[in-house]
Image (cartoon, rainbow, N blue to C red; front, side, top):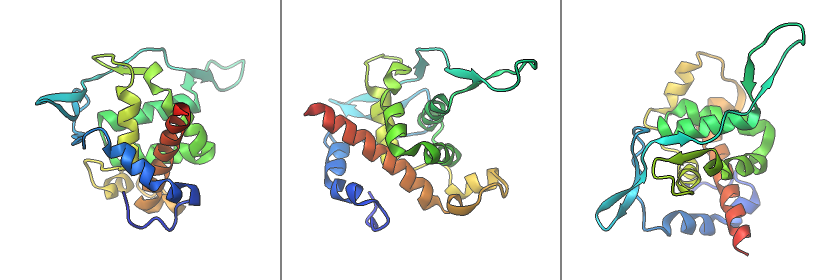
Length: 192
């Protein structure tokens, strides 16, 4: 977690210790985020554990945008686009996927985004289908974004289309961490 938390909302700073403890309480997983076919989250008695391929469990949620008189293809809902980007973060771990997720979070806010992503296990599962691996890994990766490519790569991919806050990688990191923090807050509230 970053040491510079001055720009965070007060409720995030107040719960920073809780979030750090939750992220490290499961044995200090060593995350490797290289390929979708194998995303080890640690080991248990020398046996590697983690996501082994991600399987879609439900059809994509889509809407039709356009005129009744013109045939238009369905497009994913905003919530579905957020789930797709989170899945791409797990599979590819590219800075552009973190940036895209952060931009999608902006209009809906971290609370709604966290609610959507907390339900990821109903939409995606690892090959072992253990029930909670996908959302747990999303929290880990959003709480500490470490894309395998440099954040400058995302800027180059968008060739000048970025503006304002999104020119600074820290805005992407803050948005991702805000969603992770809210997801952990929801889990904590469910334990009470």
